[in-house]
Length: 489
Image 1: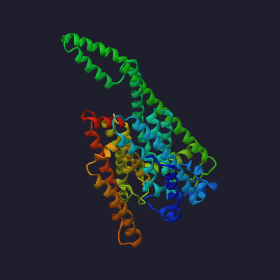
Image 2: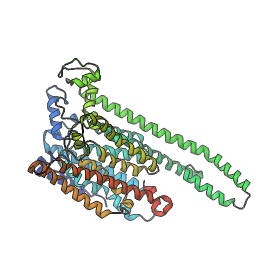
Image 3: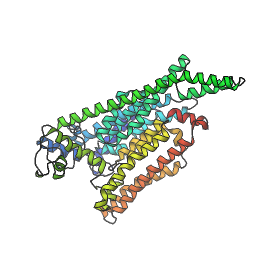
Image 4: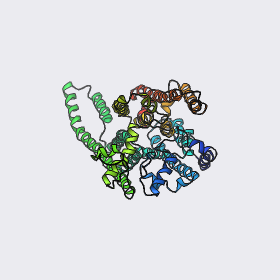
């Protein structure tokens, strides 16, 4: 069940229609826009850039510099912006279709129903209300989803350059996709193992740990009638024969991992250099704190520093420092804003360090448990990023929801599908309601809205735990279903 041309045109028209009707309202929704992705902040940065000043003069624009030339023409009119983002969604849907094809090829047996659900992933992605509203609001957050899926596609097909490009672009737009390096490297390593297994099967030589176990078991049954000494000698000979193949595979896995890191570093460095080029002809205005970090604390607040290195530090501090430390307490659907607005000033720095570490520790623990299931690890990392980022949006939710149809066998085994779905609908309704009570009627306060954002984070944590529990219970040793899980992840 793929998205036909008529369905794709309908999804495209739906975005434009929603933007035309309620686009002005959506641009001001905190669930859809932040200073990192807002069209309003993008226009303000272009205004400062056109008059020869730094686009970060007002400290409201927090996106990377290359967004400015990319959306200069489209940002002039709101509908142009929506149309360009709808094209991004269309490209992402086609990329997701290719990913679904790669996943379905890894399955065997009678799994036609599962394949239909997986092939419907692009259409489900285009019809996702979170994505439709985000696009209709003119948010540039959808670009990160495109590049994250590009990295996933590169990992599935074993293309290290494509994976490195996707990771570098996604990290450039939003720092947290850097944590996708580990699952992407594991995907590349698994692709190497499968290629070696195919070559080993054709030549009659086993080249994976699983084949080593199977061959050792079959050999043990063949020599059961022999003496124990003869069996031990044959096992030792088999181990000696397989050792070079295992070493060769390990070298290839190390090589693809190093290639991924090299491509990622090269592409990331190129993006940073292009960003520096964009800011070369514009005056940079530094605050006293910024100059203090450079060792020049005696300069006034608006003094211009035309140094290339200083410029780079200036815009990276504005962009990535903002992404990682969350200094702005503007309401959003994350957990940071109200917590740090109410925290004592002396406690904010260590608590922010703790929150930042909380986004790094779960991937390490998940990698230990799911290193044999890198695709599932990729999905879990998307959920963790959406849950623990300082400034998440609805586009982050659409990102991990796009990957859920690739795991229909896990979704069907969730212990409480009805509760998970109905609770999501309830949160979607209660979020704007609490905002209306707080901001419009004045009958509520920030606690009303923050309670919903905490419940939203709890919902994502619940979904993550349910997926992990089902995946770990359905191990390959538990039957045919486990085989499907191992093969698809």
